[in-house]
Length: 389
Image 1 (cartoon, rainbow, N blue to C red):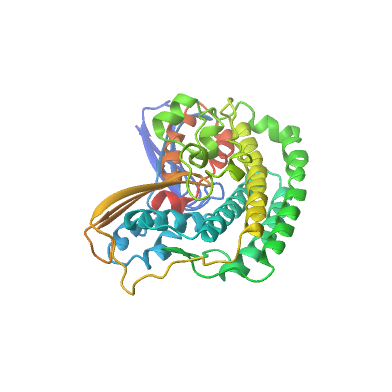
Image 2: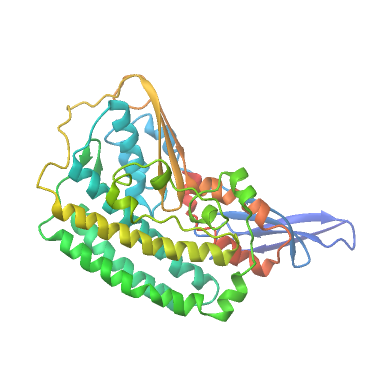
């Protein structure tokens, strides 16, 4: 018997086997440039080929679901805001939609359209991060500068409206924190136009790059059946041919309106590989910009009016339960809210997209080479805080 220790990043693990055995246990992470946070992958290798893969999670667990039970309905927005730090507005939105459903509350029309606009801008912000960081993981440094240039333009207008650059805290039960600044819609339209003008760079610089295509085409294929079995959603599932988008299939906010139904396109692919996932992300970004323009057109024609409802000083949801779900940038987020008539939730269970999506790695990685592991891992477009909550 012999024992050897190998590792990449912060962790390594022992393996024990017969003399001449080739199996080796390799730890990727929990601190590693490829993992988008403190995720650990426990790989069993046969030479350069992965035999099995186990994602080890929990390093960023904050116990948010338990903390929900000790905060009132205004305070839980702050906790729910942070698990996916690239989709803060969308995280807030799901919580307030659940509470409003419990209360049977109708939000003012302007607030509905503003929420829809901000949700799409937040989606673009999220996707730009991955459109820039994924090529970086494969050795291409230039795209991330273009991605961050576009992100800055959008973050300026979001910061102007909400006061926050990352955690916006702009949603409230019953609407929004406050109305928009004067002239803000025009500045958003200009920012959207700038970002749209930058997207061809990713077509030419990334998708037109033969090295990028060689590293991603046919690599890490996730079948539609596997996506369904693991509850995978969002751009990753649609790249495998799973045609699911809650904005179209179970509309919320203004997505069911005639104005947006004409614009909304659900981008799908059949290949299910790393390249298909990147292509879906890029095309979805273009469509989100189209949706943002459609929201701006509608908002420009709406009469001035309130963006929130007057609420009691102590807000209590009636006894009962409800389930709200939204099409977050990374996939389907679900919020199961149970109330016993108090000012705090009795239970608020969060179904985060990244938690389900990352489980598919146990199917994707076995049989592939270690050299392809980073390409597959990066194409899953996850945020570790969204996994651990």
